[in-house]
Length: 502
Figure 1 (cartoon, rainbow, N blue to C red):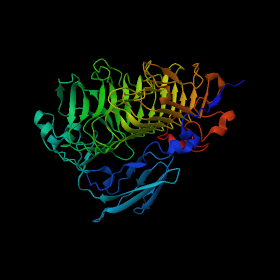
Figure 2: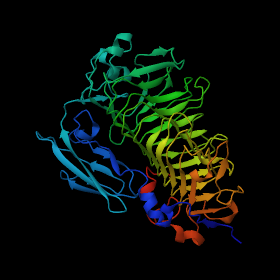
Figure 3: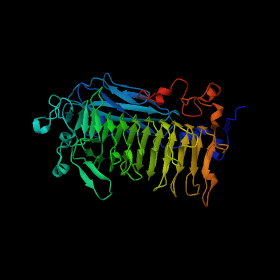
Figure 4: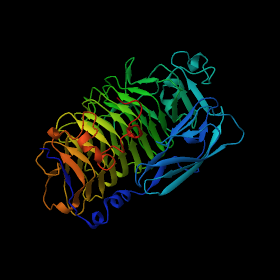
């Protein structure tokens, strides 16, 4: 006999008036990217004639899923169900093109954003590791005479080059090939994290891969062993389409972003963090920090990490969406310090996280509040491995765990009156732990159990066969599709998981 059950504990008045209203009102409905009233330093606002313009809106809050509509757009531009905007053949014009997009959530609330796109060859640079020419050999960084190395894009490899303005505000198209960290290195003795390439707003901050190509940034080649630190006026940073290969880098760090704002990291591959010897507890493939708002991390693929994939400090109003994280990674997604107004949605995580941590691990540094974890599919290797583990700050605000499929250990700790509430609602939770709702508690002095709100989850043991190996509900439970777990409906999983995930 199947032991799966629906946990229908009604703990607050919100649930008496309907679970849909509590979910819809978790976070404010807002478009994070693009922001209106910016200029051509921002990727959304400029395109190169004849090369595809491809961006994706970043939206949080309200009730997911959303409907996207192009209200005003140039001929040939489209938007798909995920908010991805494509314009295959932008045409140069003396007048910027007007774009307005409307986003409607599942309760009918709407938001819109307008921006302009200047189509021009001005302010674009090109680098080609295979067919380019170094600056000292006559390369100019144009499309017809591209540079060859990262050093060319940076403007040198000596101390003076760190402080020199070298095409600030320009967009760089990177062609196929391997690029090593051959720009200026500095030894950061203050934090003892070794050599790094300090990349500031004095350099180009929009890195785009040439359509159809995937250039590799090799962090441990030709004796260069460091990480890239984006800092100091790096608003409008945009990294799209790269293979970031740490290649056993001794530093134990990959991409780090500080002092940010309007940051986009999408469609990249992160791999090769196999050496955490010099990384302490913060080894990472990607780090986002600083106090700037509006960070979007979408459609990336990550594997091979002995530490974090994503490590988060500060950075309010961050969306982490539709990323695929695979392999036995100790800390796939780790919001660690001062995390406020984050949405972690539609990610696919497989593997074995570190003991007592989790695939999504909210830690207890600084102040945590207004966090939504929803529509994720997490499958850990064993039932004792945490899928979601909440260990948040004191004091701290609300954390909502809604509509996820969690195959593995799930838990929360510290229920003081100054923390939470922690809300687990409409999830599918599968593990062999003895708790009736399959959520493990760890208690401390002055606990307030009322701060843990659990309602309307579909739960059971592994042997109940509630989901298949792909995390989809089995036929006996198919009537829960669209109301429990990450599945929207029987035909729309591609809306959640993209990039050809298999």
